[in-house]
Each structure stands twice: as structure tokens, then as C-alpha cells.
Amino acid sequence: MTLAADFTARRGALDLQIALAVGNGETLALLGPNGAGKTSCLRVLAGLDAIERGQVRIDDDVVDDGEHFVPPEERGIGVVFQEHRLFPHLRVRDNVAFGLRSRGIKARIARAAAATWLDRLEMTRFADARPDELSGGQAQRVALARTLATRPRLLLLDEPLAAADATARQLLRRTLQTQLRTFPGGCVVVAHDIDDALALADRVAVIENGCIVQCGTLDELSNKPASRYVADLVGLNRFRGTCRDHVLTTDDGARIVVGSVHDGPVVATLHPRAVALFPERPAGSPRNVFEANVVTVERALDCYRVQLAGELPVVAEVTESAVRDLHLDRGVSVWVAIKATEFRVAPM
Image: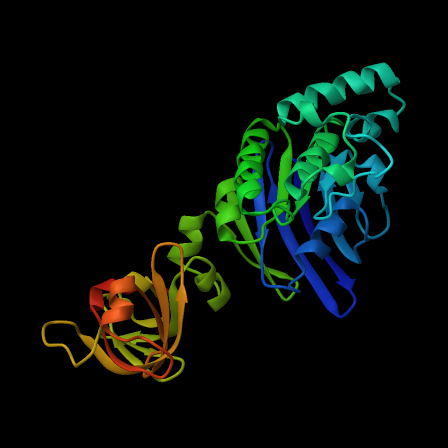
């Protein structure tokens, strides 16, 4: 196990209560809303901030337990920040060699290692460039090369794709995928969105209000999202309530017919694609039919997401032609139909 952390810490008005572990060769993505504590968590792991209680362990070494504190430069970690933080007065080759030089490695050896890493990250032709001559994505690749050249045992990446434009983002994502697949230590990456997390990580940890609320694979998060934010993150509708005789009464008082035989407190999820919209009350077999008003219509990658308010607040995914045919816009009234078997129900 590269990283094992279970600690509390205070950052301004935010109380962090973090428990996570990362194995050798594994990448864990840290996701959460703005201000949830993602970067604060990374700063504690990096040794830039101390904990109050608990323990942070890297390999077999305790690097912080509230009393014993190992400074960042002695933890054997590599950190790549959002802003990449290249030295503006050094050329790219010397930026990459800097970490090795600061450890006492001879200049010739450090520069040879820098050349190797620049080649691996396809940045050799920029070796003599200054940082201000690079794009955001190129600068981030240089920062990654500088970090990997020191052979850290734990890698921490703070939204590494945020500085890249749309075209460079795809290239940088592929570069990160390649490097993380061969990185022998553990990695924690603060991801901008679920797509970045799925592209780069083996597991996802979701942080809300300073606490890890759920950790697992995408399937594990989708099967039983721990909060509405997690459900939104994986693109699902989520409802909590009590189930009895195939009827789920939500915490908000809505009544849904479901296919589950679970009785008692449950959490139910529903994919937006399973929500059918009609201009008039539909005939047929759907067990859940109700009228709703359109709140928003937003373009997604391959569909439109329609947020609806009514007896059961729900999000539907529809085609562009459906938006046009149903005249979907804010305030428009539509009929909603959902089959009972489309709800996935799990006991709480």
C-alpha cells in the first residue's frame, strides 16, 4: 500500500475528515463540488499543511500523526499543481532537471534524465524553450516530466487537465493515461469532472463538505450513490424513502411504483434515459405517469438533459428531435412516464 491516510484537519472554516488508501500502481481520483476540500486534502498529503489528529502513512513510513511531521521534501512524493509552477528563468530542460539537481545529482546526469523524460512525454523539441513560450497543456507536460524524473513513490496531481484547451486536453489526457499505467507507486489526482476521473483513475473518492462520502469504482458508485451529488456525478436520478409492497414513498412524499421487493428504508436510482416524455397523457402500461414542468434544457455530449419539476422531480435525457417536437423549454408542461422496472432499488 503506497498511501494510507485517516485524519482530521482544519483549513479555514472547513473541517477535513478524510479516510482513503491507494495501492501500488493504482490511481485514485478525488472528486467533489467547489470548496469541498479536494485541494486541501492534497495539501495535507503533500505535507504543505499538518493534520490535527490521525495518521498519514506513505509505504511503511508515518509522515504525519499530529506530533511527528515529515516535511514535503523528505516524503518521496511528487506534486503537479494546476498552475504547473515552472521556473520562468530556466529553459524546459533545466526545469525538468531541477528536482534532481536539488537532490545533489550532478548536472550532466540530471540533464540526461531530463532528456529521457522529455522524450517520454513528447516534449523533446521544446527542450530549449522558455516556459512563457509553451501552451498550458505543454507546460503541464513539462511539470509532469519534472515530477516523474525524481521517481516519487506517491504522485499527487491537482486538476492536471484544467489549464489545457479542448484540443490539448485530449492529448494531455492520453499522455497522463500512458504515464499512470506504468507508474509503480500510487497516485491521487484531483479531477475536474467524472470524464477525467474515469479516463485516469481506477477508483473514485467523492468528497463533500470536507468528508469522503463514497469511494469505489464507477459501477459501485452507480449501483448505490451515497448522496445526490454522487448521483448527479454519475448521471443518475436518486431518491431516498421507504418501500412497501412495490411502492416507494420518497422522503419528499412522492409515491413511485417500483419492481423491487425490498421493504423498509431504501435508495432508488433511475437513469435519465428511462424517463419518457409526452405532450399528452400516454396510454399503455407504464406504472408511473405524472405531469411535470420543464425547469431547464441543457445540451450534453450526445443528448439533451431536461430537468423537470413536479410530483417527482427528475432529469430526463432526450434527443434533439424530441426537444424540437415537444417544444421543450423552461415552463413548458409535459407528461412523464416511467416503467416500474427501470428503478434500481437497494436497502439503506
